[in-house]
Image (tube, rainbow, N blue to C red; front, side, top):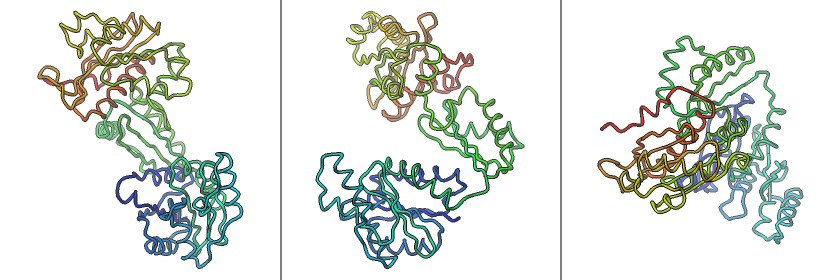
Length: 425
């Protein structure tokens, strides 16, 4: 089966909106052994949309069109597909009923703009949308199944799970077993990861595919097999990778550092607290975005000024005066204060120079001190992240969470970033 994508919208062409939907579609369909052969992105141009629909339909078995199903004048997909297929636009009873129910649940009147979303090419089959106002639809043209989907990512995700993936699996069954494992890692770079794999596994089998996706703060390592006969080799390769990179692997799938810390804390019956300056509460926000965080998270203290470090966390004025806010003595005192005031088992504290100004020769922009651990075993280290302010905060928060993760797991080896993220004086 040849699968193509047509992504539409002026916002994609201008760069205002990043195209995350094509990535989502590809990820959801890959386990069906359905990989995207070609992707085309165009703006809201009716003539161009018609031309691309006609061209791609002649090349594909399945064409997924994303975007252009809304109530506004630049939503052109239904009209363009009707023109290309040579059928009229008609008000679809099922689409209209969906719109009426959607408006009714929100206490809204169904106006003419919204009603436009019920106008579909004659003969189209509905693809249900459990989230938004616009249904999707399917129409066969030139032997190609054209599947039209909305551009809102949350709606697209739900439709892929509920409708499109099951339909494709039934309509275009594959005899092969496709398995893709996504490992999330922290504390090792893409080049270092590749180098170690090359050195440790010179016999890596060609039929087991490796993929890398660098990001901030984590890195994804993907292991894929596309034939049932290769499953045993894939499992063996995964086990070898797990053993080699055990201390860096947070988990699989969409696991995040914060989710892993919450899970480990809950399993160990331990409670956490945070004391933050340069990250402005980001560590606490990340922890509390995880469902069930209330089981393990007691308190987060955002003490941005020296005055608040003193009054809220009990950092001595003399310590601040003699060492400065960005220092080992201060972050240790912040962590101790968080532990004492919350009664938590573990705490992490951060204080740094996020930039773009405020640095000194001794403490340049990017400098941060982190303290972590328990009242009985509290450690602190200075690190250096000479990056833009937002990325600095992201990486400091992630590092703090990873240090908690390692503490909860009892990992004794020192993470490489404690050696690599040090400013050379």
